[in-house]
Length: 76
Image (cartoon, rainbow, N blue to C red; front, side):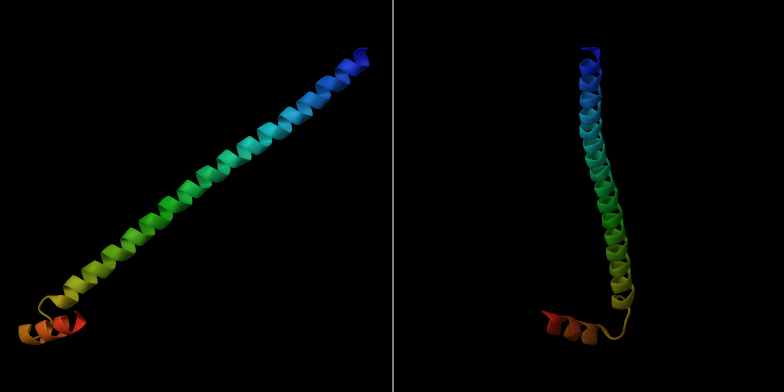
């Protein structure tokens, strides 16, 4: 009887360890995904800000105002 109880406890411990390991792995995956999404968003924001700064730098004082207006009008 004692052996059956020991085997039963061992089986439950193995099952519990498997379930706990899967839950732990899922949580780690979610955390890693969130960190990656935050890094991607930060990179995207940095790129957009740099493109905006370049556009402002290139747009202001870049030639004759009438030419700038014609170029801009053509884009619309």
